[in-house]
Image 1 (cartoon, rainbow, N blue to C red):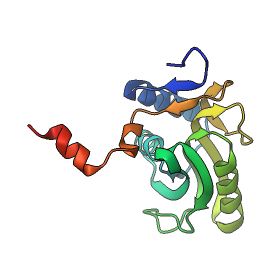
Image 2 (image 1 turned 180 degrees about the vertical axis):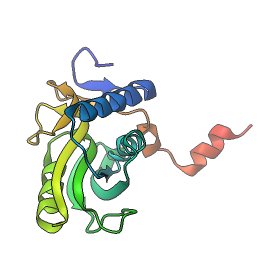
Image 3 (image 1 turned 120 degrees about the vertical axis):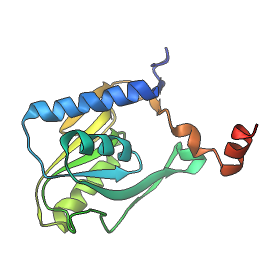
Image 4 (image 1 turned 45 degrees about the vertical axis):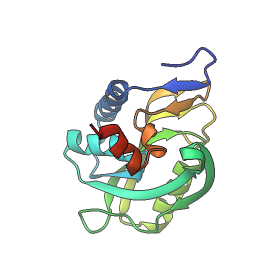
Length: 174
């Protein structure tokens, strides 16, 4: 649900999963056959996992981080892992890069640059995201929703960013 001022987008679990399914349909209908899904952790893990299951393709993971401060609401320096975790030994062939959103575009641009220059076995690279904000300097190959007002997206699992184990114990105590 987008707030009236267009500054916040609140997404339920059902809406989130429906959008990922729509992303899968877009990729499928493009006719592009890929070999592996590379998701960017953390935001791309949920979409990557679902796409991996739907397409029956191996899932590789690359860790990136830029939103760490203030319970994940403030963007800081971009960190990109030097290594990719993959069940196939080395990432190769046609790769579908998956993240949750193209926000500023900084992360996706940097990752695509790194993959193209440091991972020669990749023969083709395409990107897929759930949301693309108008301010993004990166245009993904596949995206479900374009957000012209650049809202802050409140994803359904973000409550865990500020939650600690003691709070879970208190929640589940009888």
